[in-house]
Length: 198
Image 1 (spheres, helix red, strand yellow):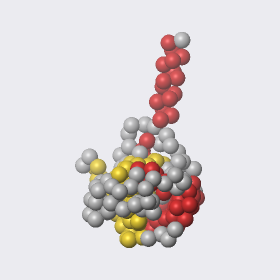
Image 2: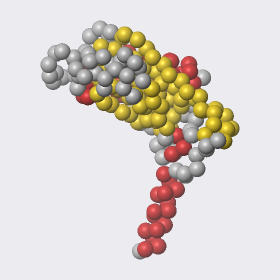
Image 3: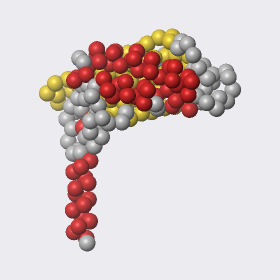
Image 4: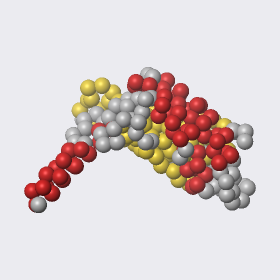
């Protein structure tokens, strides 16, 4: 399969103030998205998606990851990450899922930033201009709630009916003023409450 890329879109957001209070340092959130032809569109139901996954997914990772690293100041600049895919109306949600839910895509990003967490995700069907949301979490700690973030953007003319948008997202930090604790605090408190009731 020849990967037919129509364009690459990047979106960068620098968060300086939350709740009227400036952060100790800005937090940058970045998205990099590829708009490409849906290799399965117009072919009817396709039972085996693997040939196209193997051909396209690694290449998409190789294209998008360097953009993220450049915008975040290298691999050490990335603290949180995620991924998303949106298929146009002539495709199945399975087509969007196929291109991002493979280690041949996700591992390129994970290894590039020394991550161990899984990449949180969204996958859906949408029309041109639909919202594309990439949820993120800390690259090495799924329970660190400070890094539960979402970057959202739109592409005015994508996805066309026969296209897929594949995107990666990253953040250089957590929310500016996190104060809800982490998952482990809740787990410890719940365990204390169980022990007290026993």
